[in-house]
Structure formats: C-alpha cells, structure tokens
Length: 532
Image 1 (tube, rainbow, N blue to C red):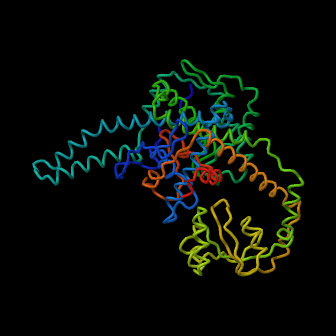
Image 2 (image 1 turned 90 degrees about the vertical axis):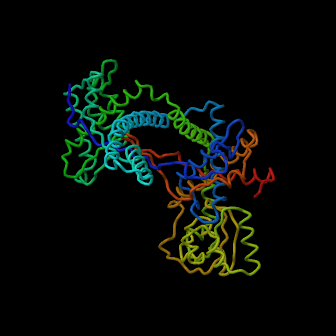
Image 3 (image 1 turned 180 degrees about the horizontal axis):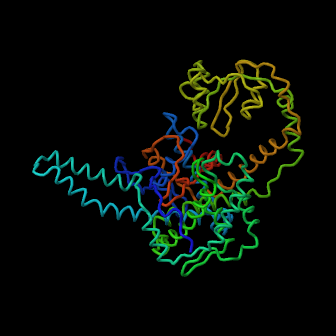
C-alpha cells in the first residue's frame, strides 16, 4: 500500500453567492410562476437565481431592467421548450455532456459531505463559544448586551458555515483508508508520475515552471496513455469492493479535470505526486458520499436536472442544425455584394443609439423627427455605454468592423441616418458623421475572408432554424407569461458571471449560460397581440 505524502489539506467552503431572500420584501411567493410552458413553469425564484448569476447584454443599464428581464425570460423559455421537445423525441445527450453531468454529481455529493462535516464542527464548538461569552458578561442584566451576545453568536455560526473553514483532514482521510482498505500499486504509481512528468516537460519545455496551474487536455491524457499502454490492464488501486485499472485512472484524470498546482519553487515531481494523491483521495471521499446516499438528496437532483435540461436543449439545437451547409456560391455572392467593403474598407465615424425593443426604437425615431438632439438621446437612452457617454459617437473605425453597422455606414453619406435594424445586441439607429479613405493594406481578397464569411452565413442559417422551431414549439405547448409578476420581481442588475466552489475541491459555473435565442419572440408577441 502506498501512503500519501499529503494526508491533510486546507479545504474551502466558499459559495459564490451567499444568497438569501430574507432581506427582500417580496410582494408574492417566490414559487409564483412568471411563465407557464405547457405543464411546466418558470418560478420567480428560478428566474431570479438564473438572471442574477448570468452575464446578459444591457443588464446593468439603469431604466431598462424590465426590458432586459423580458428578453432574458424569452431566452429561458426557448431553452425550456427545446429541452421539452428533446425529451419527447428522446434526443441523446452528447457523451461529453454526460461526462460533465457525472462530474457535477460527484462534486455535489462531495460538497454535501463537506458541509455535513462543517455542521458537525459548528455543533461541537457552539456550546464552548456560548459558554465563553456568558462567562465574559456574567452578572450583566442589560438587554442590550444580551442582544449583542446573540448577534455575536449568529455571526460566529455564519463564519463557520458560510466562510472559509480550516479542517485538518489527516484523521478523516486515514479513517477512509482504513474503512475501505485502500491499496495502491506503488510501482505503477512511480511509473505513472514519471510518465506525467515527461509529457509535461515535452509539452511545456522551459515554460513549465511559469505556470502555477495546469489543467490536463485530451492530447496530454492521450500522450500519458501511450506511454503506459503495456500497463493499462494492471490494477492500479483497489478497495474492499472496487478496483480501478491504470487505464481507467488515467482517463478519469481528464473527466475529473485534474489540475497540476503548486508554486514555481516546488519541484515538478512533488507537484505531480500531489496531484495523483489528490485524485486517489478524491475517489475515497466520493465513495463515502455515495455510500451515505447523498446523491439521493433533493437538492442534488434539482441542480443536476437544471444542467441536464440545458445540455439536452444544446443537443437538440445541434441536431436541428447538423445538416446546415453554406454553398460556395453563397460565400462568393456575399463577398461580391460587399466588394467595396472588403477591397477598399473605408473608415467611418458614426453616432448610434442602441435600444432593446422595437417600440423603444420607434419612440427614438419619433423624437429625432421632432428635432431632438441625436447626441442627447444617445446619452440618455443608448445601452452601448462606452459610446453613449460621448453622445453615441464611435470614432473612426474600418467599415469591416461592427458587422452590418460598418457595412451600411460605408454606403451612407455624411448626415444620413439608417435604422432601426435588429442586431445581436438589440435595435440600432445610427447616422454617419464622416468617412475617409482607409488604408489599402487592409484590403481583403476572397480567399482571405471566405472562412469568416462561411461562419457568418452558417450562424445566420442556424439561428433562423432554431428560432423558427422555438416559435413553433411556443404555439404548440402554449406559453403564458405573467408580465406583472415579472416586472414586480426584485432582481439585482449586476453584470457578473458566478462560479461555485465546492467543498473537497471543484469549481463550476453556478448556473448554465443562457443562449440569446430571442428572434422567435418578435413574431410570437405580434401573433398574440402582446407587443409591449
């Protein structure tokens, strides 16, 4: 049996957001639906949880929060519709996504085990802490001091439960080793660590020690496997009831996203041995969590179901668009229609007002026709913050930039206005301030840009297919949105993507990223007389 070089380590329970609804004065129950999709619902709490932990264009713009909430909800509805349809059609999730779900489940159950340990620490230490405070304030009959004691006690408990808490794990890990009668083949351990070192040295060369963290990619795992081919079937480690071959152990380094950590002064051999030890310990902790049936807890099932639905929606989108192709003549026509744009890209300077909805854009046009200043309206309404601060002005840029905006601007004359047109960020209205000859060195031939043109055209076709499907599903499953509840829902408009840190290691996004599948809602709203 191989004894570990690191039998304890400092573990952090640092949830990405300490989330509580106690401080919010909700006007309705958090389980109130903001949308119904067939027999399923999106609750106020589900919406808030997803919205606050996701980066979304314009979310932080004051005065636009209700509009952004609506667009975000349309994205959530689209994902749910695609997931519902995919489940009915029994679409298979990509093996890579299944691997992610398995990895997530392991992290969740280990996290629950870790939290249970911390709770035990709280229960053990709470009486002693209370007694020490009582002794310190013995004889006092002040209600103010009594309240202060309670506050300090609550603060202490929150510190233990919600902030970093150091657990010396030597005793805990040793108990697991004994409980499961763990054995590791010492010879294979040395051969494996040596192979990992050689692969890393070949991959990174002299730069190896400039990295404090290295996550193994598939190519590196394959290289390690190739070095150990003759040993693949040998048993690397075993417990009383389970065993793992060397091949299984190496492949799991990738699925578990193992990282090589340590400072630059730490020898490579030690960093590699620590990493392999961590994975071995990870097996024991995971096994203990499953033996305690923590994977059956409702919170694990709920979290995994969210991710599973996200992944199956992604799988369905891939299936819908897998046969989409861009023909050579389409690439050629796109280039020819924009020959001046590619051959002699002029530089343009524009003012722009970018808003989220068609009604807002129409209102902007009305105010412009009434003679209001374009620059002042841009400062007040545009959600493209960096240009809004300077009256919507971009400054000179090549007409090959900013997609349709740059292309159209190159065809305008100074003072001419164009829009509104729908782009990825919303509805844009812009006017040309000036244009000037660009640098001929920026001219692009067809063979230089055909790949990027193909990507543009392919993306357009795929988005059209997905949005058409979502609109069809919205009519079939019957979507009902409670706009009043949505607008009353108190949410934070902070622009941030949140990650979750798991007890016993592991980092993952707190919620799935939401794709901007929004165009379907334009026609759907009009069809149902719901244009707001």
